[in-house]
Length: 199
Image 1 (tube, rainbow, N blue to C red):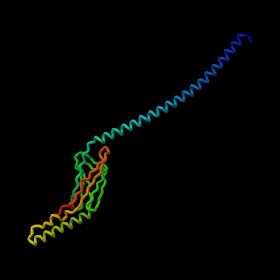
Image 2 (cartoon, rainbow, N blue to C red):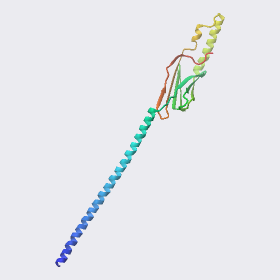
Image 3 (cartoon, rainbow, N blue to C red):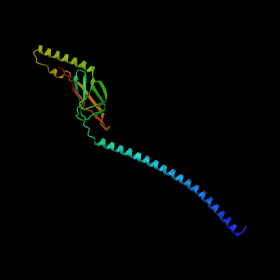
């Protein structure tokens, strides 16, 4: 083997070592590249999740601001429409009340009604059979008092003014606005109320 062969063999060996080393580094580089790709995909997934949370937070904030600045002026009124039938009405001309619970207590008789919606001008009617019976008794009592007063030459008795005016009525309505803001209507308890028209 002459010098040229040696040089060729050495150069070939060095080339082979360099090639093997290159392959090793290429494999390591591919592994690192795969790790980097996995890390980048994970980072992208985290970024997408963070964006989703940011969108949810933004939506919640917009909803909160909308609820706080919402104009919603539902007003209610309650009263007897016939003996034993009490009506609570949404008096507003524009706003609908949602998820409405109306509770009325007449003396110790309690009635509660739920409606998914009560539009402007609509009402909930609650039945009070005991109050209806009591009103009929009070009407009879008032007639008897007036008949006694007429027989004794009195135009009317001072007691007439008090017949049937010793009842207590409590009203309460809870509802939600269009944006879900909870509201409550609870007027002052009415004492010395009647159960309807006495005459």
